[in-house]
Image (cartoon, rainbow, N blue to C red):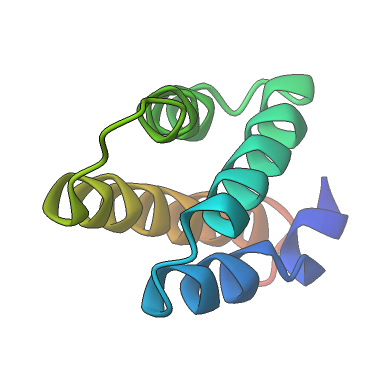
Amino acid sequence: MLSFLEDTILTRAEAAMQSKDYAALFECAHELKGACGNVDMFELFEITTKMVDYLRQAQIEDIIVEQYFQKMKQTYLRTQEGIRLANGEG
């Protein structure tokens, strides 16, 4: 679980989002979905699942991807903060 604090996936996802590289964003979201699903991070799993499912569609709207990304980012950061607090780092 502590390795989640050192993960670079958010940085990679932000770069993909900025360049609108939705294939790379899909890979990041899919990787994160698997990681958080394995350790019962339900809220983060839920939003990454929605993003992965949306990015699998043929027609993608930038505004919807942006909304999913912002929700994923907020949830990711809250999850990291929760881990820090649980580990006595807060």
